[in-house]
Image (spheres, helix red, strand yellow):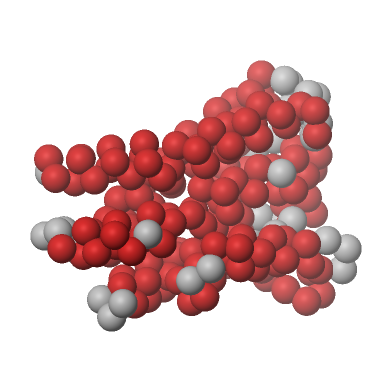
Length: 209
């Protein structure tokens, strides 16, 4: 347990913290870009799906960054703890930060007299972040390029605008705006799969580098 806590501490201070600060800053800047007061359910969903969903890309995509340095990668691979466990610890930290930020943001909206179903909006927002973050993680795992890892989920986000629902079907990111909460289950489940696939494949790759 002590070893895992040490890995967690190192991962937070040397990898997650800068991205965590960016995510917090995004939440703080939300009033300048999106509505946060007196919103109905549809407008609240707009703020969450169009803006807060991007936190998944910010927090999840960079979990492999430390191993870009060959010396760090070689050091991690010599430890008793498997590299996949190290990734899972980093991922757990990122998810924890995400959940806290989403909950506090929803409480902030409630404080601003917004009317919306709290748990449905919470789940829908988390589903979006997991899916977009999962795309980033899998892309990083496959292409070993952080720029591409950011570009692919951002591109997916962009094609969801306008007539995007025709192309992505059940995986439409902005379904809550239309009052559809059930389709978030598709994003949630596939998002978890993308994350698991990305972490597993990256762990396999590192053994042969």
